[in-house]
Image (cartoon, rainbow, N blue to C red; front, side, top):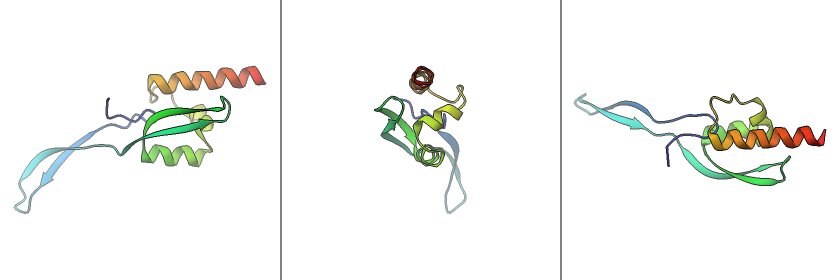
Length: 96
């Protein structure tokens, strides 16, 4: 399983550990990923995603998964999230 957020595309970054003697060694900064089930109001079911804590706050701020995916860029989304976005758009078009 890759260490990449399915909604924002946030992944590991690199930097340095710095000792008390100021010696530098390379290290990785991993994103804070969580396995969550987000509810889609349009599809009336839960969708399991592996997203960062920052993305979870963004989803809440925008008003839910459906609203977040409507504004999200396709290049940032994972294949699974892109599939869900298209399902939601199709269901919204059918209901309108």
